[in-house]
Image (tube, rainbow, N blue to C red):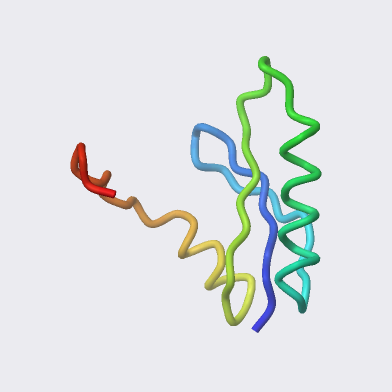
Length: 72
């Protein structure tokens, strides 16, 4: 399964950036993109492991519950 890199906007809009076969390559690309962000940018970058692009989008758009305070 490939690793997908997406740009995510506050309104939960996704822009596909690239996919990678190796985790290390995807992680490095995501870190590089994040390092180029400045304080005025409202988007972020996420890495997701999924069978295909549609599944990656679905997983990124799932609303996750916040972890309780103090729980690590």
